Image 1 (cartoon, rainbow, N blue to C red):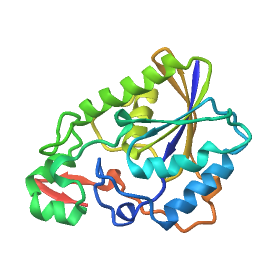
Image 2: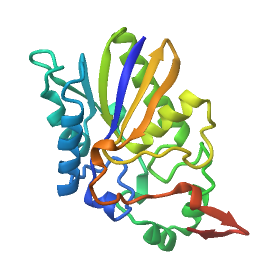
Image 3: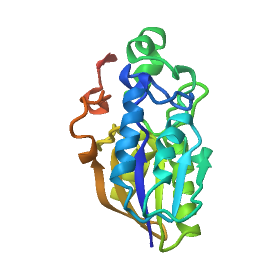
Length: 227
């Protein structure tokens, strides 16, 4: 059995603007840097055998302060993996929802149906994304049995892990909270996942509210898209 401490990267300006970041390399903003420091203090006494991060800069910057702490082995290095990147949203990366709805109305209408096999042009579908993410997760668990891994990644990646652990379908809107710099824990045994803790933000309690993109509020009615 392997324990994963799952961490979503800290806030970026694009999170604040509710843009589709995808695999564009956007750094943390000042709030994101503060969240990363809070997270590091929260986990300072935790025993970690390995520290793994998406190779995108917002995850790298969140992982950086986690390398220090009483529970770290000497010389702990961060492993950066492109397989832990956010879903690729193709032609809409960097865009806000109103802009997508105006410039690509048909693609947006397809997106809000949350079909696991739909992909924006140049991007990847949820099903393709899920296969990439879970291959990486299971490979990490297989390589590090009986150990604790801190894994810094993205909201979509954590959604894929959550759906897999609870047996939820890949189609349909997100059903879990995934805050920036939130803390979750799962146990992996072979290819079975168990959620121990999800979306803990006690270390961020006195910080300003986070921006929220709520997929549950998106719907399609008679061919018209409401958000």
